[in-house]
Amino acid sequence: MPKRHFAFAFLAFGLWGNPIRRFHGALSLSPQVTAPRHLISSSSADASPPYIIYSHHYCYKCKHYRRRCRIRAPCCNEIFPCRHCHNEATSMLRNPFDRHELVRHDVKQVICAVCDTEQPVAQVCTNCGVNMGEYFCEVCKFYDDDTTKGQFHCDDCGICRVGGRDKFFHCKKCGCCYSVGLRDNHSCVENSMRHHCPICYEYLFDSLKDTTVMVCGHTMHCECYNEMIEATIMPEDYQHKKVWILCNDCNDTTEVFYHIIGQKCSHCKSYNTRIVAPPVLPQ
Image 1 (cartoon, rainbow, N blue to C red):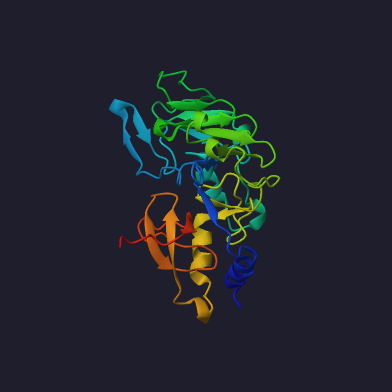
Image 2 (cartoon, one colour):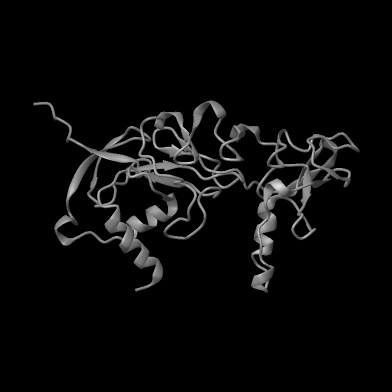
């Protein structure tokens, strides 16, 4: 049996009947749990097309963030648009011993993308005076012009997150920022985000992908969870069984085919649903 399918089969047994709680991945920032069943950090770090218009002080060369600077990686002394660009490049090096990741807090120097001046980390360029990022975190050495993401720095997580500081609290036991809607309303698992997705094995704490939190408190990527459900074949006795569900995301009530792991909303395609009694038809 292929390794990935084996993981599906193993998890399908372990998650039998568990409803799920969804949350979105991070910027470079990292995930947190948002409201109804969402743990949000930006979905895939705003990969808008890079472009340069110097006359308007736009200089977005990074596919992950909108910023007007590049960083010098202290680990290899090379220059990159952001730490994700660095990690993607170094992960492709031929020699496995040369592959490494950049620690965001170690960055000491940045290069202004407008005047090309190298300087210590700061929000405003010391030479031309351009603001290198509307959002700036001196701790994470993080810059981003798209402030609609609601970036904020969490001292307990030690990194920047998205979604708005007023919408999250830091769960000390889980070791992550969760939606205020989940305060006293979730199963605590120690350091629940500080592990790898059991399907794709990517580290979840600062992943850019959407992540799911089960009622049991354990986590995995939403995409991987959905793939696992699709790959789980229902027993013959249940293949034609239907149930009514209420979607916690769009509040729609629909009749769908029953699945052991979770029911997909036919309206918004979310698995954040629960089985309810059939509607009572008027006599």
